[in-house]
Amino acid sequence: MTEHRPDVAPPTPDTLARAGALLRDGALVAFPTETVYGLGADATDDRAVAAIFAAKGRPHFNPLIVHVSDLAAAERLAVFDERARTLGEHAWPGPLTLVLPRRPDSGLSLLVSAGLDTVAVRVPGHPVAQALLRAAGRPVAAPSANRSGSVSPTTPMHVVDSLGDRVRLVLAGGRCPVGVESTVLDLSGPAAVLLRPGAVLREDVERLIGPVSVGAGNAEAPTAPGQLASHYAPRAAVRLEATGADPDEALLTFGPDGFVRGGAVRLNLSPDGSLDEAAANLFAHLRALDRPGIRAIAVVPIPDTGLGLAINDRLRRAAAPRP
Ligand code: AMP
Ligand code: MG
Image (tube, rainbow, N blue to C red; front, side):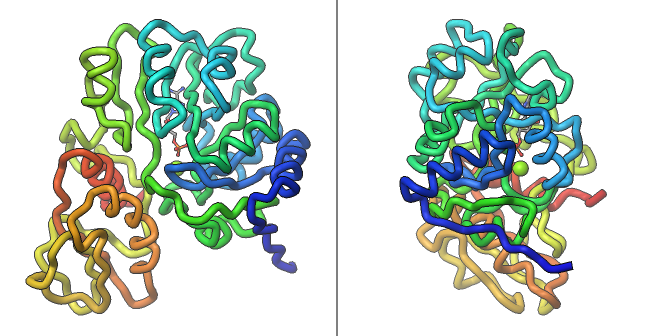
């Protein structure tokens, strides 16, 4: 069988128009967002959405995030109460996903909700994502553009390495500036629940809508490691809270690291100790250290504040026992 490589194209007006037409035609298009690269499909088309699950090897019970270009478009898909509207007005476009009751007349494929009566919606801020959503003219379902369970892509080449010919077109928009997936906030019930930490912090949300609780299995609520679903995992094992590394390990550090010894190879997430820089580098560094002959990636402790909460959430899942 010959291996087809996907088209990798910069986001010119022509390629954006072509990407929009491909989406309307039921094809899969990968595109940059401020968080990670997304694998997009027309969210109103059952077959296109099914193709996302097939391309990723994603279990059908794991629902998808639907992306739209603005709050008005989001309100046509889901029921917004005052909390949701406040957040939509203040945090969008941006790396915040809201889980809301699905409107019966949303027109969305039932597959995006994986059988739930809620839908996760987001208005991304990346200019290429915005241009693509306008070119498509419909809601776009988009999980991260990688095989299910593995490390999320933050560059176009990561997408090609992970999905190969399973995607028709990759819009190449450089490195993703945030680098970890969106904050997911469940507002479908009376209490606001943080389902996944991201760059929009719990305290940012609480300033706008009041108390937010932390969902079960979330890294902000310590649970037994066995309860954590394995996700974001490189091929090599991941060992956390490292103070040094063995000769067959790679070392991933943060901040000044002259005193941390060992490792066949090493990378620093942010020599200056910036959590923003560390998040942007996290997935690319995990991929770069995941080399033949490396048994495990040893990771030094990362501060558990601000964006560090999202980084540690991803690292704990990367280190969780594999299925
Ligand atoms: P990903 O597409 O890999 O970025 O993951 C999307 C995240 O949003 C996953 O953690 C999903 O479980 C979550 N999610 C999407 N839709 C819903 C929903 N309707 N209810 C609860 N969580 C959702
Ligand atoms: Mg993902």
